[in-house]
Length: 385
Image 1 (cartoon, rainbow, N blue to C red):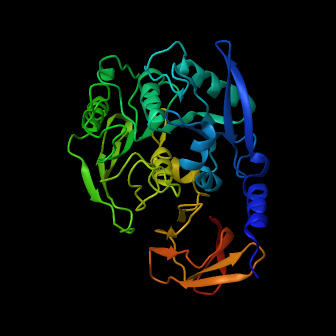
Image 2 (cartoon, rainbow, N blue to C red):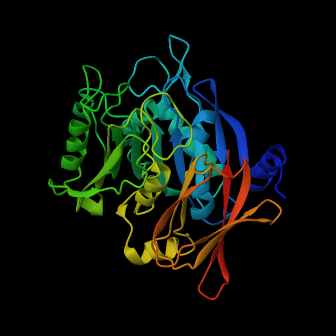
Image 3 (tube, one colour):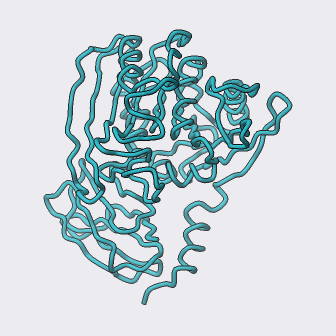
């Protein structure tokens, strides 16, 4: 017996996210500014917790970004808090971030005020505050790296870049880890730039030089595990910068103005499904604090409870990708919301797999991971829509 979709959806909202999703506001510069906060079950008052700021794109909003560039499943595992701020309206009535795009709104000041406000209510590790975002949210993250580097430990931009000549006035106070994820067929923020937007190459070169990284990157071809997404991915890493910081770039060949791994179509070109941007961004962020790379011993201690199993995209529609680089399993058992077995997948000796969801109705499922002695050693939730 399988649970109807509506019942499962209500169960998913109340159990997975429940009261942990908080809609709130603060007042800054006489403006009431709203945000959506996600606090995972792993959060413990009194234990310093990283904060990830997730900025929406131009014309979008905090709610859409919470689902489109979704970090909540990652936060549930890694234990960091996610805040989704809401921009103000520009002269055309569209939500935006004033990343030196004109207007009187001080979004850098608002971001700093938001960090301080959250730190007054939650146990935020102020040395481990990170910024990411989609498109205009990526521009905003670069602006914070230039103007608020004493508060932001690392940034990641998805389909964003810097403004033309922004590097001339950029004045970070310390080496800053940078990640850029961008498609070569992005027609909104062109990969090669235009008269207003810096090319991705120029943006990366600025930060490689500023951080004093080795100028020749380490190149890796990302496995093309989904050959139906119309694009492939390459990874570039500029290593050995000051304080151990690095610059990383995921170049999506023929990728559009989209968030890799997202299950939601955007109509802005191909969405790469060979990796999940949210997972990769956190894997990048978790290496750093405001002083640079965390020592291996401290990193291991900080994240000793973090599980390395990846299940993405989540929610999923047609396929789901499961990877477990540091684990050994004999099988994965899919069950529905009331424990009924749906499917069993033998996975012994494999490091990842792609599973078709065509036979599964919309709803919530639980993935049980078994060892060689047929003992359950981990359980993950998956929503199929």
